[in-house]
Length: 538
Image (cartoon, rainbow, N blue to C red; front, side, top):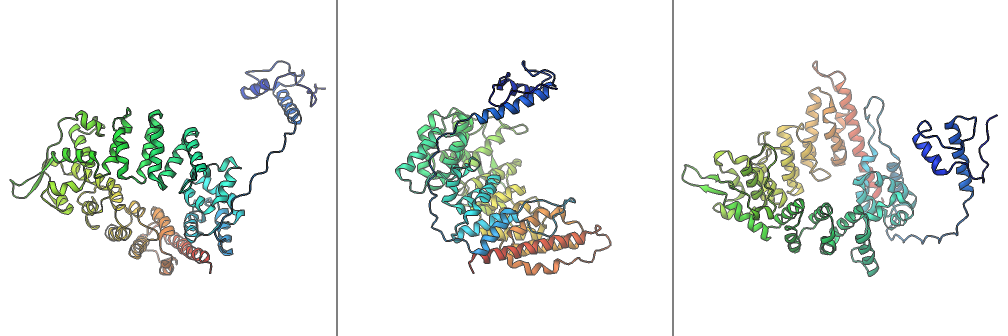
């Protein structure tokens, strides 16, 4: 008969720490002394650990009862209409997944509709059902893109729950303070800034910057001299939100920072303030490099790139060493032009408009470098006039417009335009070039898509369907259409849900796959329309 381990309440012959070490390393590498004889060491260790666990738990003395938590703050918003509350429960219970074949089928992806539902609910000012809050917080925990809308909808009860469950602490970090903080709230913000973890401090500064830019800047300045370089860089990046002219003195001081990355970020932010002293210095440097030559048949831009990167340029954020494959002079030129206020070029180049400047020929193969720098400047300074000039018409060749040479550049330039203008430009691009290159451009368009853009997307999908290829290469655009098309477009799509006659050279079964994709699209659009009606309270 094998030996019996020590009884509960009797101290084991082997200390608990020794049992844990043996379990982690394995008894082949470390066998504890004092194991019961006649048993295999692994079994003996596990038996002793089980008995010791029971003994330790049974030996705990009950602690005094803690204070009961205070009641959650009242939520003054009206409750959701019953149909909308049921819809929320369905959206939160959905789990993404596909069948064994990897096909999505014709059923809508409900989790992808949750952000839109939250946006509608917040716009209408409803409060969530209390029983839905745990699932809502779990969804926001797993998807950071949901957090702002989910926490705004969850309201004060979410903060109350987050104090009781460590898994939901992100809610406390994401909502520090109110728009007008009372003294106790200011004290809490200051304590979190001085004592919180780095991630908590970043979230605090970002949230505060979105509401009160000056207060966030003052908070950062209060500890700036004692922060680590990598932390200063992250904190400084938060000033992009709500960047304003009063930020200039602080950013000018940051130009003398010990960290090169901090200096570069400060210079970038200052260059986005067209009236800053740095912007004026950069304008003077850039103007010395670019001029109009009228000695030839037509006015031509001539470029004389800098011959050195002097200490003043370095202090203003110019990185002296270029990346591999770039020449020094072109590298310095691009940084100067990118940081110069775009408005300065009109006076420098004979009163010409941005379109006229971009249309000028550039001597000695400097055009790509010069136009690329202007593209970056237009995005940084959010200048729609220059963005239009650099984009050119949407029917321009696929290499891009007069200045933009890539889809990524065009998407960034489009982001500076108004929603309607963006939609019209992308619709024209799709009509000319189709959908194969339009995915990045669609991503910057406002939701729901304007009617011309929606029609252009549907027409292009119909053309792709008639070509007889499989729809999988258009799955990204189809997914965007499910979330972004106006639900009113569903009736136009009904004719596309039937399986078409396949041409002789079509891919086998492609028509069925397209019909399934269009069925999912129409079902999703009608579901979005129903969601909107449910949230109207009708």
